[in-house]
Image 1: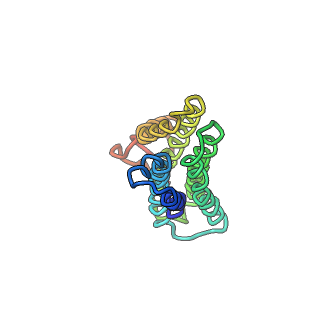
Image 2: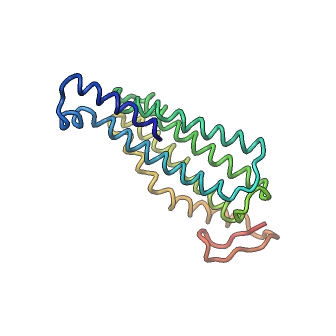
Image 3: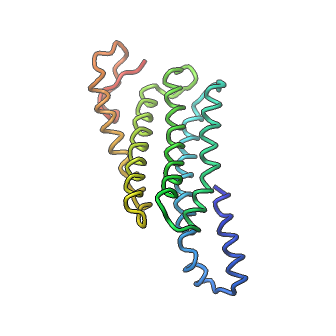
Length: 203
């Protein structure tokens, strides 16, 4: 997250060399300021979810460690497409690299949760909640994919399609309801109706 500020620091140096005023700096670097704010917010959201998930992980296996490293690689790479967004003309490939990186981050997050579903002894999180979190990740991946499609078609305003992510909670609840109806009659313990998505099962 801290690396995102580096292009703006370079822009300040350039503005000083050009003897720009503060107002002129902000006007000239509006794209970089937008890309910084957008990426900072997205990474913050990924980090908070990561912290919540791993706070309840009781043991790390080599497989889970490598999934975590893959997730971290996408986070480390994100400042590069962020700098592209702020400093270069927008084109479909740029949007594909930027939003595609976000999709890979979400896929790595999903992979960790699917691994924990198969190894519930590694976490103190109730399996019913892990399943709900899986639905949230799948919903986010779907919406990122839609945003990418819209961005490629509407190049100039494409990044605003990322506001679709505000629908993640709604889509996740719909997926939870769908999955709970398609897997009835489990022999496992039934979870109460008060949980999002209706009745569920817990191992």
